[in-house]
Image (cartoon, rainbow, N blue to C red; front, side):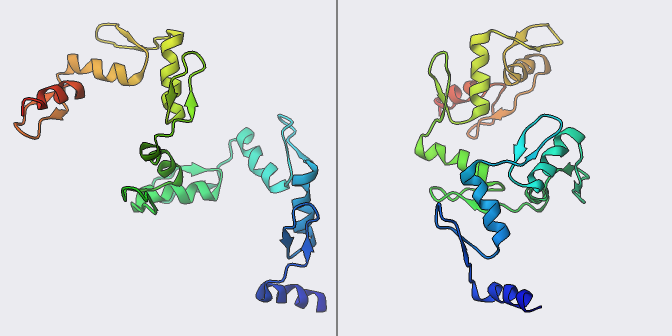
Amino acid sequence: MQSSRKIHKMVHTGEKPFTCTQCGKSFRYSSNLNQHMMIHTGERPFACTQCGKSFTRSSNLHEHMMIHTGEKPFTCTECGKNFRQSSQLNQHMLIHTGEKPYTCDHCGKTFARGSFLKVHERVHTNEKPYSCSVCGKSCTRQSSLRKHQKIHTGVREYVCFECEKTFITADDLKRHQRIHTGEKPYECSHCGKRFNQRGSLKIHERIH
């Protein structure tokens, strides 16, 4: 009983008596220190029986196993979408609440996810961390790089069902299909004239 009281007291005092000899980080419990030491030793005692991937914690292994089992125990009460992690559910819920807690220090624009903010900030810093191994072109997003690389492969997987013309990206196909549908989503704010391509609108706006 006395040891339990002593441990509980540490919660209030902030005492962390167990210190890592490698990096100096301190812990309240010896079990936490033992877990932490695996970072330095490289030990990963918990292995997945499906693919062999190993982990330092049993909780991480359990979470990983859901990839193989398809288990998604966390359900959104708004739309019924399921998630493997509670953190993923919490992040998803921001879509329904409209909350955008991440703010850009440069322009004040807000985002629902920290990852969205990180990508957005590259507009201000001009950072382009993803480079094409073929031509060296740099992109701000990994998805943009994947889209660009299709130019080199020549794969045209998107087919127009109206005329059977093929395209490299889904966006290219979508723009093309406006020829058949007559859709003109881009409107001139000066005169109201509409266009099916953003580039056509920009050219037109030079008149004004």
